[in-house]
Image (tube, rainbow, N blue to C red; front, side, top):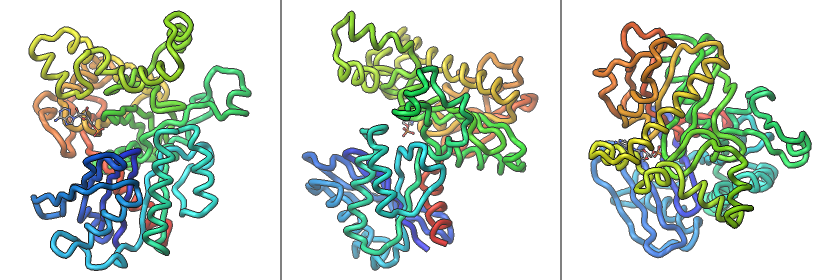
Length: 398
Ligand code: AMP
C-alpha cells in the first residue's frame, strides 16, 4: 500500500509518498511560492542523492497538486508508473476544534466542520481545505483521511484547557486552549517508550517540539494532559518570530496607549517577535547561535530567554504529572542544536535531570543524551509527522 501525505500551507505544499510495507518515504517533495512569481517544486527520491527540480508558474494549490502527481509519475524522475498505485491520501489539518479527537475519513460533513474551524486557524485551515478539494478533483475516488494537529491534545482535562475568562467565552465562542503539533508529540512520546523498552501507559514524558514554531507537552501514560500552545499557536514558548507567553494586558496597552491596530499587534506578535524581535537580527536559531559566539549581547539574551522558558515549562509539567521519566527533544532546533538541549536542561540536577555533554554532541538521530546518573532519561528523537498521518490513514481505511 502506498499513501500520499499532503501538508498544505498558505503558499507552500509538502508531500511524501510512503510505502506502508516498509514505512519508508519513497519520495519527498516541497512546492513553494504557490500563487506567486517563481513557483517551483523540488523532489527527492529514496536511495538517490539527486534532487528533481521544476520551475513552473502555479496559480493555485490545484495546479501545485497536479504538478506533484505528474512528478510522481514522471518517466525519468518518477517513482510510480500510474496514479492508481496511490491507494490513499492523508492530509494534515491544523485545527479540528473540539469535534475531533481522532483522525477521520474525509466526507462532505468533515470538510464543512473543518471550514467551521477556520475562524480558529485562519492562516492554516483554509489552505488545508483547498488541498483536500484539489485532491478530490484530481484523484477522484481515492480515499482520503484527515489528521488534526489538535486531536492528540483533546485528552487535556478541563482545568488545563480552560482560560480564566467569563465562562460564556468558552460556551459561545469556543475560546480555550487547544494545543498544536499533536502528531509530533504523539509520535516522539511513543518512540521514546519504545527506546526505553517500556509501555507508554507506564510512563510520564515531557516532549519538547522545538522548531520554528515550538511547544512543550506533558504526556501522562500516553495521554496529553497539558501543552504550551493555546487557543492559537502563539501561546507558550518564545519562537522564531512569535512572542509566546506575555501578559495579555500588553495587547490592550499597545492598542490604547501606542495607537496600534489589532492587526498591527497581531502581526507584531506573530511575525516580528521571538528570536527575530529580541535579537533584532534573525528568526533562525543557527544565526542566533553564531551571533552569540561572536559576542552579540542581544543574541545571548535571546538564547537565555529561550532556554529559561523551556526549562520553566519542563518544571511546570513535572509538577503537573508529579514527576517525569523522560524528556524528549525534537524538530529543527531540538534535533540539531546541542546548545539548546543543554541550555534547557542546565541546572536541573536537583530535579534528577542531567545531560551527558559527549552524548549530547549529536544531531538528527535517535540518541539518549542523559548522563548515566541522571534519574530522568533525556532523548533526542527526530519527529515524523508524515508517518503518523500515513499510519492513521491506513488504519482508518482498513
Ligand atoms: P522546523 O520548524 O522544525 O523545520 O525547524 C526550523 C528551525 O530549526 C529553524 O529555526 C532552524 O534554525 C532550526 N535548525 C535547523 N537546523 C539547525 C541546526 N543545524 N542547528 C540549529 N538549528 C537548526
